[in-house]
Length: 184
Image (tube, rainbow, N blue to C red; front, side, top):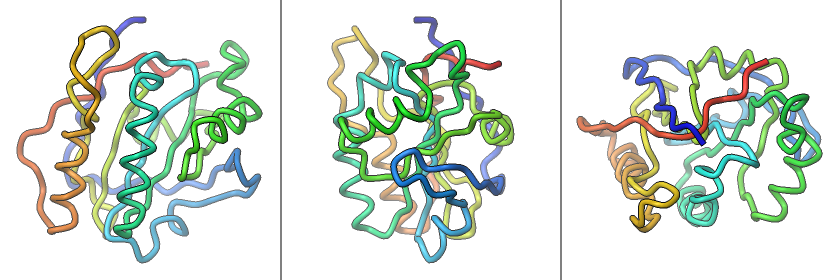
């Protein structure tokens, strides 16, 4: 379980467009459709097997249920190589999403082009965009990590989401830490 930090791309970067299959509905979903009319859009690169993601899954679902009600789009993407990591393939993603109660689409980036376009580096990796799809936060969920005894709260991402609702951008942002994306 090597800890890899997220890439702190420049704030203001525009979200790259994508169309990916949703493992829960079987439909092809696009960023344009999912973000249309939303106050902000949160894109999360996660996967099934990463201990860093498993560590915050319950809090992530709770936070998502709260902010989906506040007109924020929330999208999860897995870009891991499912040949080397079959537990991160589409069928397992669907099972995992149902088991965890994911209230957001869980998209599969088989060719890893979306992860590369976003410069995603780890799981979890969080990117929050304003209503114009300009990046306003890239950073950690909170300071909790597996085995560090800090309770999972989502406080960093929650502050960023609250700021986005007020049209503000947080000045202090810390990178996320997690398992590296499993590249082909």
